[in-house]
Structure formats: structure tokens, C-alpha cells
Length: 213
Image 1: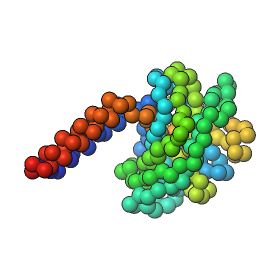
Image 2: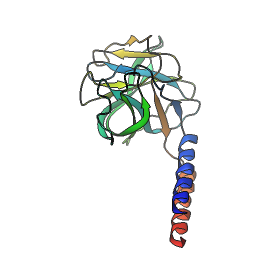
Image 3: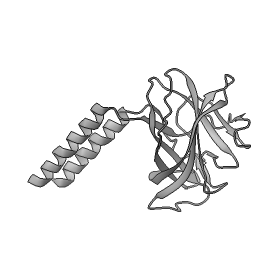
Image 4: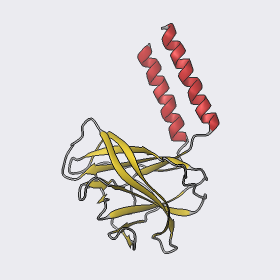
């Protein structure tokens, strides 16, 4: 009974998070793994949201080249995340907001064609300033691993706006990456009070059921 209750609550929570997504490009399983994104070569991908809301959580997927499954139990990684305006010519323009964040990660159950584990990374935007996209406006997201070079590969996305770029000089100039048009990431907004209240009530109900069990 307890297991069934937890499974039910996990399903409700997952559904609530999914429904709150601001933008989503899911990972492409079984391909070669995407491009390196680190201090030497940084990748950015464009996106356009249908609604306007402050981004509070970023999920992205990636692997560690040629290392198979080096972190079978997951862990944490320091990453840099940045939002850019579009330059009007299909590349990242002026920097809007940048933060160094700690991302937790765990195996996603997916693998690259080289059998490297594809990890799911999750990180919360710390603030106090948050990026709030204007609906229908094109922006760019960049994420890169700050802990090494020629290791972390931001994984390819199944779908997207079919434009990506890379820089090898810290963002002073950007180039189009036509070979890999999409990368895998999800942007989640700051939860609305009503959503938080619903989740809280669900947690209380679950605790009551556990006490009665």
C-alpha cells in the first residue's frame, strides 16, 4: 500500500512539473553524443517560448566522452549557464544573465552510440535576478562544464528551432554549428502559488495515508 501511494505521488509530481515546463527539447537517444561544451568551446542553442515567466530551473542532458559510465550513482557538477539575446542574424547576441551553478546529475537510462551514459543534469537558478523571456522572442541558452575540457558533451536534442552556435573565445564572437542544430534542455518557470499549494496539499494527504497505514 505504501509503495503504491509513493508511486501515485511521484506520478502526480512528475505530471505537475511537466505541465509547468516553459520550454522543452528532449534528448535524442543513441546518437554520437553532441558537442563539447566547456571553457575552450562553449555551445549555445536558441529557443522561443510561448509564454512569459521567470526561469527558475534548468534541466539538460550530456555525457562524458569515452568514459562510459564514470558516475554510476550520479553526483554534482559545477556549470556555467547564460542567457543571450539573438543578434538578428541567427547567433547569440548580447549577454542577458549568467550564473555559475551546481547541477546534480544521475544516469538517465539513455546511452550514446559509443555507449557513454547520458546523464540528466538539474540545477536551480539562484537569483535574486531571474531571466524572464518575452513570449515569441528568440533567445539563446548556453551551458558548459567548468570542471574540465574535452570531456563533457551537451547532448543533441530530438527537436528544436534548428539553430545552434559555438564560441572558442569566451563569447567575443560566435559561429553557426550547422551539424548539430539542437541540444537537449528543459526550462521550468518559478512555480505559481496555486501549483505550490496543490503540491503541498498532496504531500499532506500522502503523510496522512501513511499514518493510517
